[in-house]
Image (cartoon, rainbow, N blue to C red; front, side, top):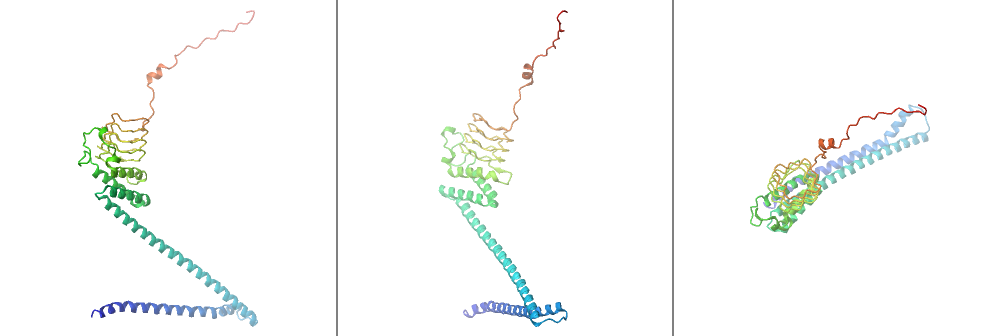
Length: 317
């Protein structure tokens, strides 16, 4: 019973293969018969139709029949070439689709492994996962938005404000006693840097980094347009030439932050703490200042009476 069961399962497949081969053979034989009739009978019929009963020499008729056969061969050859080109194009499309599917599956596997690494207890494994996500986002535009969201969520969960973990420095620790972010939380600095690079070419309109602990973070030259930093602590953060266009900075702590040449056009800075912040050539998008009207009036030239011209005196008058 155990040996007969596989044979019964294999028999329908074998019978179907035999039937398909037989049908292919019949079609090939029918095609050869049709081609034979076309090349043997059709040229003579075409020549007789063109002659319309006129008497010609047998040699001339044979030459005309061969010319028709040559034309038919050229037509058939052209059709074969066209069919071969179509088959090649079709095979190329199938190969491209298969390659694309393989690449998407490879990217999906890399994405899954990188996300799994973010939950590791080892710092170097988490950093490797963040770098892998960064690389995938640069290569795959369809996964970029998801990776940006993952990196923002990673920062919100690992750097909450006020600090909750025993490793993070307390909220009341002096800023000079706090190590830079790349030293005390290297994985968070990698996620923040990747986010600032990928946000330059993102499509979604909002990224949430509110209520995060970004004290002494290195954000020099990074792009954070339309990013929500509400109630975040960015004390002594490096924001040299950072792009914060249309960012939300409501109740953000930017004390001692370096905002030299940073771009804050149309940024929402309501109740933001900028005490001791470095604001050298910071672009707030404000119109150029005009001197007050009183100052202009003070330097306005006085109104003078026109001088009367004296009449010319000629000699002898």
